[in-house]
Image 1 (cartoon, rainbow, N blue to C red):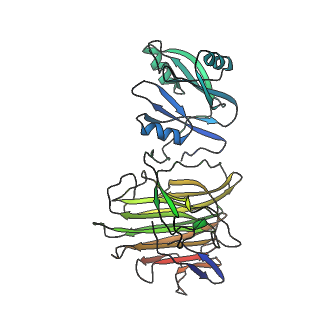
Image 2: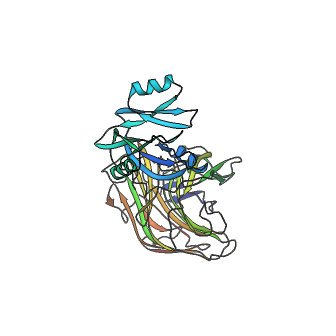
Image 3: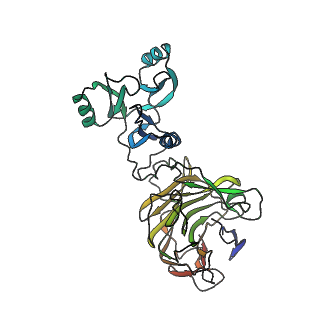
Amino acid sequence: MKWKLMGALTLGVISIGMISQRVFAADETGMYRLYNPNSSEHFYTGNPAERNQLAKIGWKYEGGAWTAPNSGSPVYRLYNPNAGDHHYTTNGAEKNMLVKVGWKYEQIGWYSGGSTPVYRLYNPNAKAAGAHHYTLNKAEYNQLMKIGWKGEGVAWYALGTFDTSNEPPISTVPPRKVDKDITTAGGGEGQNPGSYRLLYSNKPFDAMPNTTQPPVIEFSADIVLKGIREKNAFYGMQFIIAGNGTGGGQIGLDIGFQEGTSTEFAQNRISVKTVNFPAGAGNQGQQFYSVNTGINMDQAAKISVQYYQTGSGEFVVTKLNGKTVGIYKTKLTTPNQYVLHAQVEDWKQRGASLQLRNLKVLKNGQDVTMKGAVNLHLLNQSGTAGTSFDLVAGTNRWLIHGAY
């Protein structure tokens, strides 16, 4: 992750620091479905961390189950410690009765609301776990009744299906510490013993509210990233929106190649990571990168970084060829303009290059690409502002920047 440090960079009079879907809305929760091949139990949760942990210990992840509202009639979750089974119900009397006979009441699992029915079935042949099953798929409901399950009607209601195709794959590995001893608060870099950022494999997306408002700022381009892929190869690019001032935060994309064998971190192929260094974030893992191993590219791609401000907080949304790479809560601070930059580096000095075409900057939906306080241009080279650049690592054409 370690990028060449630039220290303070001056754009005109602006001093900045540089670093070397369906996604459910905040008022709804996507419910995941998992299956235990040993006990035959299906399990439902809206918690990505719980989903990931169960998948890690052998449960089979089956994708999205339904979308639940974040308010309405509670669906109670109970656990039978003797059978190892879970049960879910909106019926308070049923919940209380099960608690009396030894079931453990865990929590409100989710809420019932909407117009899409979720059906409940009972398996009279189940000997322990897996006696009940829940589905909003009427065809599945009917098929299970044909083979002996007893249909028990509507258990609760949902807002609809939950499409998980835009979500990153399940991560079963812990994050790694990177940028050790050089991480400072809010996206800065400098000598700082004991500091680090985290590199996640497929960190689950954060819930961002639906909005009709455009991003506060969006940075996009068509790119071609080239380098020599051989033993010990390590090259890449960053495409960044930053706050203005010390510790103002940085968000964006980190794309590159590192020779290695870790598929969880997309080594030995082009990896695509979201960069999220929120303003004010600490220096011991509060800043992170997240590689999305479900995203694939060779050399060419259309990329974009979007920064939203909503009533539920600030968010970074990153995309590659129209597919969402990451959605994470963040924070940028600036007294005036945001600072944008793109750069390419090659740690083995083999001349990696980055072609940038159709560079575009939108501010509140308006094209300001050539209307910035300082338009995108080559570092320390006046008269080079434009929307197309050919960058080469290790030369005086390795970085562009601007302020908007």
